Length: 112
View: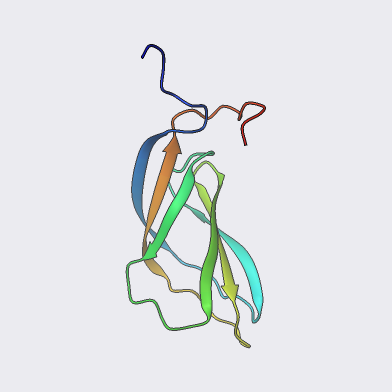
């Protein structure tokens, strides 16, 4: 079959695993808040597909509920605290899995 197999915003060019140290701050009781972290190598348009703490995650009521690329070299992690007191997510080494799209053009009209 002749032609290209590239589908606009459909294919991944790379999946990258980044290891970095993060130091989250306390999350207030019964709240959801985004914290931003510098992570070298992240680009606008990257999709973060996995986020793992390398230590023993404490058995608490604080967890992450969303991950996003905010800007080049900056990610946003949204934490949720369902407890009645302030809790701090663990500091330390994290693995972040990043999917980089092959084609960062705008999605064409008619594609949902």
